[in-house]
Image (cartoon, rainbow, N blue to C red; front, side):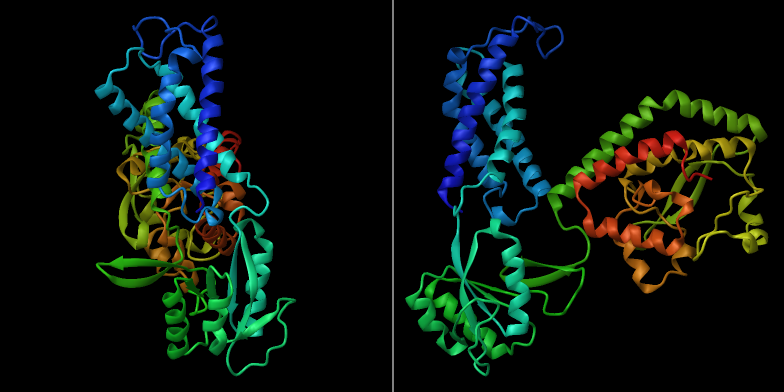
Length: 465
């Protein structure tokens, strides 16, 4: 990545610093309460008395941005991943700056509210700066190696994503193929001509497409690129997977190519877990009076247990006891076999609209989804997530088709696409495909969208039985 990106970040940080300092200077007349309860009133902040911080902030922010990988493969980073990395870098920067301030002890104390305002604003400005790119910035020439039927789809992808900055200098064909043009791109020669092509042209990277290459040819092209210092890339999907994505890992010098059909962004998954812990704890605390009331009503109804615990299949089929408020009669499980012929759901799942085992209180808490709230304890324990495919009963999993088993490859959740798409009004196969769609398209933004869409579903009781 060119130093121009780092220079853009430095300029963005300086401009953000000036803007926040001026805003903070004028807000003093409107807001005089400090961030720490019981502390002195909001200290006076001006651009002049805080400008010394720029000397510390710019290098610290740039160093943390570098260490969190925001300068690696910038053009091909998904936007939510980029935003996550920038946020992580800013958090680390604040901690480093705080440590520096503790050691250096500046004459003018740093305003906590100013530092908070600058940090949050810098996340936004840095993110926007990365999205706005000058024409031609970061563009470099590449060569694509492959047969015509395999090169054309790859060229179409490159044309679709011009923001990646990859300019195709030409195509290199297998030795046995003719040298007619491919998709309007000129053919530079065959694999045998590649050494001369790389020597006489300003090529930065060689992409090898296709799945039918023999080991000798692959080794030849890789050696040619290594010899002249040109990056060599090859089609990692040579096994023809439609969903799984490749990831190269290093085991003490032993390179291993892994293929995964589940989300692989460790940082984003860590944030997802943090959201689960904070969110579930907050909901349990805020709803505790209502949950205690529901527990009391269930107990007074028939004297039976308040909670219903049922083994469910979690991540990769590991079983765990999922909790619910009991909404059925105490012997509901033993009576299920006699109602199997009335099942209204396709597939191995049992559901019926007027189930005689449901109690009067149970019908109400199901309609309002209050019966599901004990599952926030499962989320807090790490057995479930706020968002994810619903955890099935182990005997239902035994009836799954092979393609349906992949929904167990992600931690189960309280809500998912199925819950906001009609719940019990959706047939079983559609339900399974919606869960797989969630896994394939997962991002933190998708989780946030589904959480927001779940609120009206719960409030209005759509699809609940």
